[in-house]
Length: 114
Length: 112
Image (tube, rainbow over all chains, first blue to last red; front, side):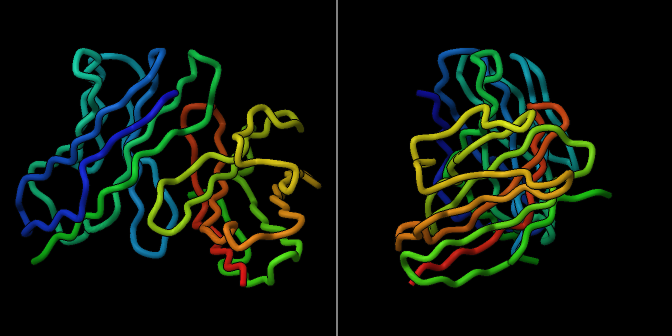
């Protein structure tokens, strides 16, 4: 079945550091890929998405590129802020395979210190 | 900006009791979902609902679970006879197009 593997956390960075959170996937078809973010005490918010190979999703300074050859969708940000502290979830959905459900990774907790 | 709301934020219930978790999806959305997250584990899909019927469900979503859209605004998840292992955070989501789901803040269910 479809699955998502994220790098284990927690990740602790200083403000203005470079962030990478690795995400790889296994899917039988051509999934759509997502990053969701969960701030403390809140629900999951869609951060960015990519629906086909080589697409780059971007939002709020975060980027991720859909790499079919490496089955990856790594999240990057050039300069993190304290306000980026949250849990980040990589996810996929296999719409072409007829499924709308999101399959999530375990989540990576990011803490950014001033 | 419109958002998905869920009530209650925290529900404590005894094993064997029925619970109903409520969600108000975004008003022009057509697809509705329930997910859950057991503490320390992945967010797991439970069920999707479109056009007043279940469109997909996971193996977790057994006969103890049911969903309903009783009116034009609410979307509910009922657990008929709760078990200890049903303790989790339950998230409702809705979408206008099926690949962009918006999540509510969740209901923490504690079964004692």
